[in-house]
Image 1: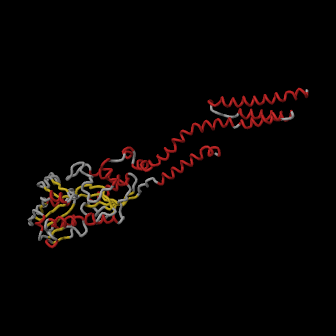
Image 2: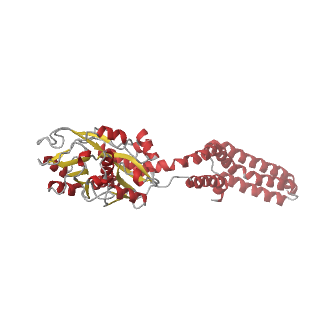
Image 3: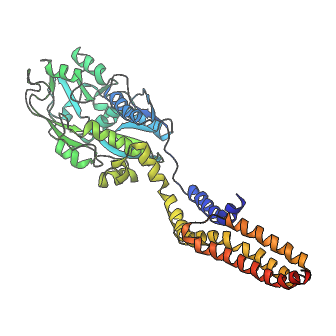
Length: 430
């Protein structure tokens, strides 16, 4: 071990120091647990959040889905860091702010439906003046959007009676005649949407101003609900209907790990890239409708797709390799000179096993030449015999055998010199 450390101690210390420095600059590992703010139990947001959570769990990331009041609550929770991810309706950032959050893009349309009773003639939004209209509870995404569009259409808050009802509750109140109209935000596959379309006493307003609204607000898009697309057997709706649609976007903490962001976009692609009743395949997910700044990782993903390593390896392996690539720089920097030095070091170590005996050989030769008596020379001669025996035990690669035999020849040469010096004294004693 002492010899090993003597030869390789310095290179090992340099490599360890390089690794320590590299680890200091290594990207942190992604979190193992993620909290998603979904929506009301049984709603579209809750279902979408559960689908995202399932994709995260499939790759080993623990995911918890919170039941919330909807978009406004979700955005608030992400901003307060009570959740890592939230599903938020586009169009809320202007009033609520977007500090501390980023968007991963819109996932799907959630159109604004304006249903009214047939007894109330409503051809456009300004016709809602004087009516009792369900526009959702205070702080809800639908109320924010409905209030904005009504005001732009010249319908002030005092011009109608607002009912704080949303979703299925608003649909039930409309069917019961408790409200004259309902402005609701939901997907076209929701059961109560089909129920309202089926009710002969209720009419769905076609949003004639949808194109203009989309131009005025980039987070809105005009969509067509085609005749029979909801139910072909009953032909629901009976005619093509123009709707204006915000989108459900994925909002994350701005410091959420990029690997988790990529996983969420991948999950959104799996769930929504195939199209829907309102969107062509490939329309979602998209950064185009987001009113919150798109994260850097999302921009990279939309431009280039999954990383090279992610296309080849599973999530955990790809993420580890992507984080540790920085270690390759100091390792390569250190290994190149070490590889160049290794062969000379190897040759020196092998030859040292041979050359180390020359010090003893020179000392014995000097002692033999300076000996004054035959006994002293005979003692040197015996030590030379021991040296020859020890040298014979040295093991070296075949390519270095000539050096070993040269050593043994030199030992024999010194022994012969000592024998010649001892010969006169031997003859004298005889």
